Amino acid sequence: MTPLTPSSAFGIPLSRSTSRVVRSRSRAQRLLRAATLQARVDPMVGAPAHAPGTREAAAGALAADPTRPARSLPGPRGHRTPPAPQDPVAVAQGAALVRSLGRPLLGGHAVEVLLDGPATYASMFEAIAQARDHINLESYMIEHAGPGAELAERLAERCRAGVRVNLLFDSVGSIGTAAAYFRQLEAAGVNLCEYNPLRKVSTWLTRALHLRDHRKLMVVDGRVGFIGGVNISPAYGSGPAAHAVQAATGNPLATPWRDTHLRVEGPVVAHLQRLFTSHWQRFSRTPMAAANYFPPLRPAGSQRVALAACDAGRRSNPFYRALLAAIDAAQHRVLITTAYMVPPRRLLRALVRAAERGVEVQVLLPGISDVWAALHAGRSHYARLLRAGVRIHERHDRFVHAKTCVIDGVWTTVGSSNFDWRSILHNAEANLLVLDAQLASRMERVFHDDVEIAREIDAGRWARRSWLQRGREALAMRFQFFL
Image 1 (spheres, helix red, strand yellow):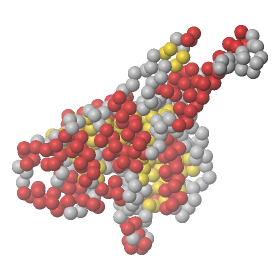
Image 2 (tube, one colour; image 1 turned 135 degrees about the vertical axis):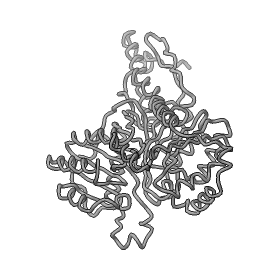
Image 3 (cartoon, rainbow, N blue to C red; image 1 turned 90 degrees about the vertical axis):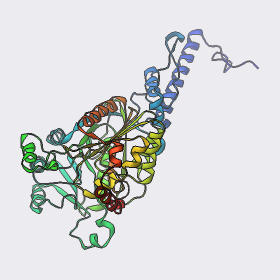
Image 4 (cartoon, rainbow, N blue to C red; image 1 turned 30 degrees about the horizontal axis):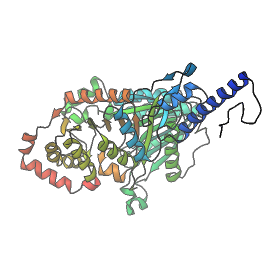
């Protein structure tokens, strides 16, 4: 049977020019369908970076996905464009991340790393000053001194300008904050929500006392988001005055805490917003004031991200799943920085297996801590990790409060989750996951800068530690489930 051609399909002869138009339109439609289908069903792309309908659209959609095999696209006059090279490590980590989360990454983001408190507060306060519609702030710790005082002034000023301000804080994390501070905010027009308040009898009679909101995030006008490990606290102070405190007291904990935060723009900001509003609706008696909380968001950059968050007391933890999947898929290196390292068995086994198969595994931890039991419970695992080949570093000059991980130079997370039972099982947490080589390179440099100042734990000397130290570890381990 003779196949039908554009000139014979309907038994009507077409002119040569008309036939070329039909073929050209058919090819354009195929490209459009391919680009549209890839943007809709591709497991790695949550937001196409290009408008569909052009050769550039199809190329952009295909190149945005490291898990798809590259295909040659038709070029001018029948030439074929060679496929772009792909990084197999990025492909493996991208696929593992999507499988663990069960949803695609979101494209079109601009992510900025903020090191320590002063840089974080400067960026947050700048965003607050530019707010025109609303400010939603959620933090485990809100303290009235230092940056807390400036925060109150800036929020009050925005309230006078007609901006809606909602502030959610944890009752235990902010237990030392004067009640007058919150009354001042409320009088200025700030809408307050206290998470599982200690003043309620029901909190003491249920496990609500144990479940805490450990998140640190902020959304301004539904367009700019902040997430990481930085609380609102004078513990992050800087400058000669802060170091003078250490000199006077001899207490390293009095020096500015070492921490990491992120500023992000792009579609994931709506996910941060939804995380905040759902927490508010669940724990506040006062509804949020009407505002444009979910404006349309356009791509702000090229980075692909996902938000991994969990509610307090929930056994299902997306961040934990994503972390285990990334470590299991690691081929080259795993670089962890965390304030509290009391890992559950599955996480400990994942790190040991990675080191035993030749992956470079390094962990940066504080040598001083504000939680005695967490410090020594974490140290009880050093011997097993060291035997497997994991390198462990402790900083003794400053308290390391950052919660970050970089894997294979492409996978990065920054957020509120520590590598302990409390973050994985008990707290409400939120982490941003980024699949981007440039950001990962930046975070690797930060890690190595910290390691240069830290002390590496020697396996031989650790094996000869005192019985007093061993006793502290054994005692602390009895409480690891709650740490």
